[in-house]
Amino acid sequence: MNKQPVFTAQGDASADIVIVGSGVVGGMIANELVSQGYSVLVLEAGLRIERSQAVENWRNMPFANRAGSDFQGLYPQSKFAPAPLYFPPNNYVNVTGPNASSFQQGYLRTVGGTTWHWAASCWRHDPSDFVMQSKYGVGRDWPISYDELEPWYCKAENEIGVAGPHDPARQSPSQRSQPYPMDMVPFAHGDSYFASVVNPHGYNLVPIPQGRSTRPWEGRPTCCGNNNCQPICPIGAMYNGIHHIERAERAGAVVLAEAVVYKMDTDSNNRITAVHWKDSAGASHKASGKAFALACNGIETPRLLLMAANEANPTGIANSSDMVGRNMMDHSGFHCSFLTKEPVWLGRGPAQSSCMVGYRDGEFRRDYSANKVILNNISRVVAATTQALAKGLVGKALDEEIRYRAVHSVDLSISLEPLPDPENRLTLSKTRLDPHGLPCPDIYYDVGDYVRKGAEASHAQLEHIGQLFDAKEFNISKGLNANNHIMGGVIMGKDAKDAVVDGNCRAFDHENLWLPGGGAIPSASVVNSTLTMAALALKAAQDMAMRMKGLV
Image (tube, one colour):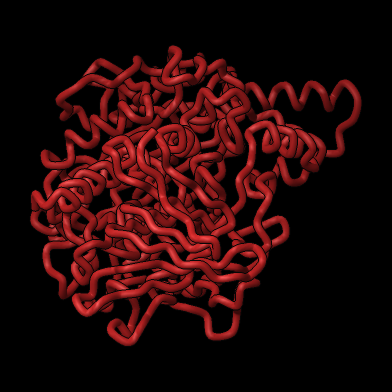
């Protein structure tokens, strides 16, 4: 057993490393550093839950919640650590602006984080994504290159246990120094059939690299295709942040649930010396440390930094650039649905298995956003039932209609690439407070013309795809929805004047504070952000260790 944090009789603590947030980023950092002999304390605002509890809650949810994809409601919330709810809405995060609906985020404040209910898509950014400004004249460049992050992508894939295609022609991107840890989740009939229709036309349906096991991996069983990944993998074949949290605990890390951090102390050199948290009884405690990481997701991290403003940092911790809370991004998108002539039989295997990446990169990105188009593999039975009941059918006719629609129905999820815009901003509410009396987050959001033009281009592509299938009941959803890929609020850059953190996710303003995860990502790309977050976490952990050892 490695050394552990020390607690006083009053409940204060001290540790080498203090981490706020226990999702995939906080869990990986904790596991890396406790394994090197450091004492590690992880503070999590939310509750601790068991997988079996979440599974049972989902089984008992009303039909309306299931049909509405209520992936939040089955996870119990701490009274003192609210997160967004939509059944009914709780307005914890208040979003305004021209595209407010496209930034209605869903995330968990729970030990293990939001990867309890993710799709487990483990994409890498494309090399072009790192040089958007220099290559296409839009957005921002990263302060590090794809090649610099590539070894960390490999390590993250091994930590998560990613299953992906070994054929470079089916990889996106194909620039990799190591194979995926496991071979891809096999295509079901629907994936193969869809690819046979669209791939000759340049849409390039490829396997999604997935954080789920195609063979036993680190105590996880092989995925058996429950199709229940969102909202909960009932058998634990899908990776969740809780896996790294439990691994870190076995090595000696201490994780405190219901510990809501609200304040940070700094010394005369602007180093962080402690964070303060409130427990479920409202009592305040202090955790002192040598190095600190905030890994509370892309909304809660900038919220905490702004809340923690002090005399030396009057606009917020790490905020001399005035960039904390700015450049908020998500892959705003929409859905396209239709009925095919041929049966597709979606719903066997993981919730998402394949994706069209033909318009992920290209010169068009000078003018409008890239896109990716996921062939959703979530069972169509609930949607088919809702549609059939709306027709007023009963008896045998109802059964036949449900069967036909479930077998022939397609749902595509389209993601668009936003550009970082400082006006898309998180601020602290002056009127809405959480149960601890702390300000709730307000967000202003406008996707911008770059995304709007990208949506128009993707509409034309989708209409062509519909024609390829002789589609019936072809429909493109109105407006834009959120995809819960929160990025940009503590953006990375080369210059402390217009960025919050450097290429190691270390804050420019505080030499012992790291802000890894989605908030640091400076270019959204169109792919799910989790693998990039994990890679940045592991890179940050190395930087933390080297600075603790005095090697930097």
